[in-house]
Length: 80
Image 1 (tube, rainbow, N blue to C red):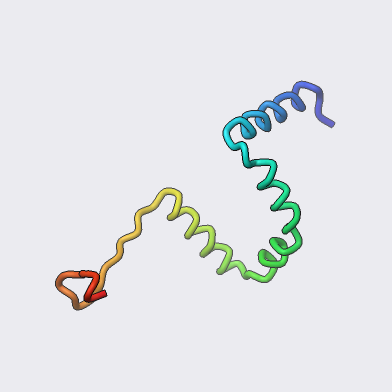
Image 2: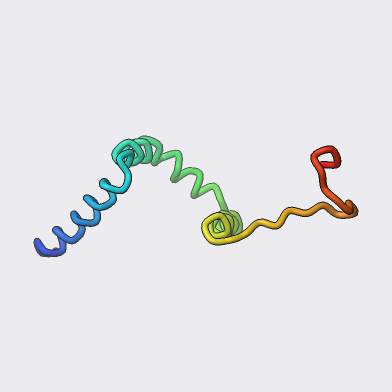
């Protein structure tokens, strides 16, 4: 239902993605091969788990993790 210009616009995004990631075709093939498994994982997780995964992804992309130990004045490799 889209015209040629819309098609060209989508293709330009695809070509740009291919230029930025030479492994994209392999990644897409791997995703397609594991699609049923990915759907099963998504379906088996409830909304709480999905929101937790989404939150973890957001933190990984834009957040900062603070790691601390309770009741330890100075954390060292020996005390960890």
